[in-house]
Length: 331
Ligand code: SAM
Ligand code: DTB
Ligand code: SF4
Image (cartoon, rainbow, N blue to C red):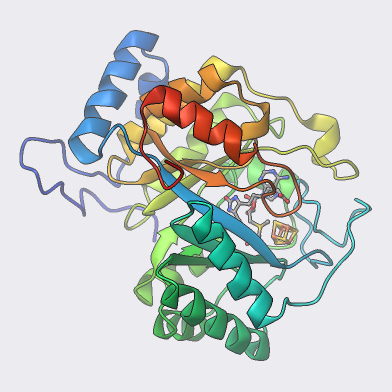
């Protein structure tokens, strides 16, 4: 799945080819450009591929919370750590569809349903497929994140009409093993391949602010940009603090300028991917978010909670996007 040269090309002639052969040194060179040069390049790429004044709005729902057998060192939902979170069963179909309708009314165009599983059981997958079809029938884009999938499971989700599958690589290959031991990075890459092969669009990104180095953040971008085809969506999560998990002790919030540089580098390396400011916007000032939009971020999660942690309130988001003249489902 990793590797390959220039397998995608931009359709609009004059722009650079979409590449899948990025070297770490190239990512570092982009990231280290003088800020004005980096921003100019990122903005040029952004404008070639997207409306720079539009931001996508997605909404999240945890359809099955907590009690997860995986040991992801950042996550409130892992059964390995005492985070005070109460585990729940899979939500009822009608409640999920009603929540999706509320999210649509609140301005979300995509609805992402998340379950704290290592991988779905077949009976649970039947229920999720029904949820996907029902949410799609509301006129929303659908996304689910259910852990590892076989090709057969991915094909069933595709048949139910699923648009996107979220499965993050989370961090660089070098840092990965210090954060997660219960599944390998290759397991994740295999799931992404199954999702692709089933014809579902890929949403894959990772987390910053867990104590990783800048090189790890860039290593994560290189990994994503060298997938057989770039993910259509790239969520960049700033670690949302959770007490009781291993990452708590090593976490360090990145320098805001470093965050903007990372978004700009992602925009240049994956020119056609939607880059989402995902978790952690609650720590970001309006000015920092505005710089990230200028650098090429063009999606956010809206709604008061993400899965188990807080997100900025709708009125703050609407106010910010209004002041920036950005169109979205919110305005
Ligand atoms: N259990 C599934 C899985 O891990 O594939 C899906 C749900 S999981 C919560 C989805 C993603 O959320 C993780 O891969 C991770 O990147 C991100 N995430 C989890 N906890 C986070 C936190 N506290 N702050 C930021 N991102 C987080
Ligand atoms: C992603 O990259 N971020 C979302 C979504 N994919 C599923 C999850 C963020 C979770 C933040 C921590 C929480 O609320 O528990
Ligand atoms: Fe489980 Fe997903 Fe949390 Fe890892 S990130 S512990 S797989 S819910």
